[in-house]
Image 1 (cartoon, each protein chain N blue to C red):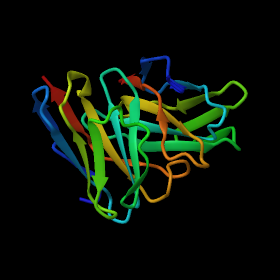
Image 2 (cartoon, rainbow over the protein chains, first blue to last red):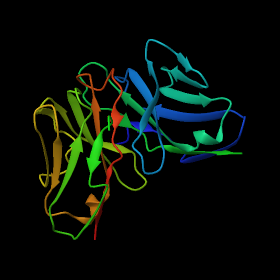
Image 3 (cartoon, rainbow over the protein chains, first blue to last red):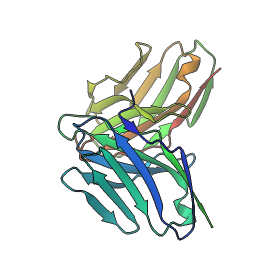
Image 4 (tube, rainbow over the protein chains, first blue to last red):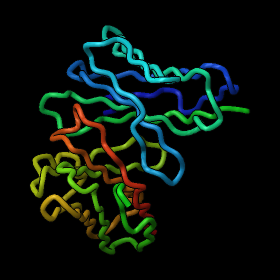
Amino acid sequence: DQQVKQNSPSLSVQEGRISILNCDYTNSMFDYFLWYKKYPAEGPTFLISISSIKDKNEDGRFTVFLNKSAKHLSLHIVPSQPGDSAVYFCAASAATGANNLFFGTGTRLTVIP
Amino acid sequence: GAGVSQSPSNKVTEKGKDVELRCDPISGHTALYWYRQRLGQGLEFLIYFQGNSAPDKSGLPSDRFSAERTGESVSTLTIQRTQQEDSAVYLCASSTKQGSGTGELFFGEGSRLTVL
């Protein structure tokens, strides 16, 4: 049972435009959300996170938005750069008591120069 | 290096053989996790260590899978009598915090297992 869902397996965006990656979750106990980025033949690396007490967190070109009522979060990258081309994983956990992150299946972003 | 190190990077084995995958976490990280990613799937939690104890083994898919950790150091994931459905990339991660809820995980590059 996939508790974190990324329904778009791939996304292509022109360099300089905005990339929007979406993620939905089903478990209302989740209260901490993260995005990881993965290049081929490398392990995922942490990108940005958000706690459920916030609805937005921004770090440079990356912004994560959280809509708790819709159980939806999104990652915005603007402006997109060719080096952003990677697989992006959404992850969630219940900060209290949980020992693991639940990951989505990933979205492959291709930024076209 | 200073990151999480995993070995072997690639392993091809025959169905029915046992395999061992190794993980060296970042020095000082008390928490260690094993995940796997099968083709077309997300990362699937297997087991979590805090120190050398494993308070959460809920993700191990069968009794053919086991893992151990020496102190707050190396961990070994063992798969006995491998099956083709065990083919996946096995990822190890470590963290400074107990539980992953509020701490980021640092992943290794993974061990790609192919069972023929």
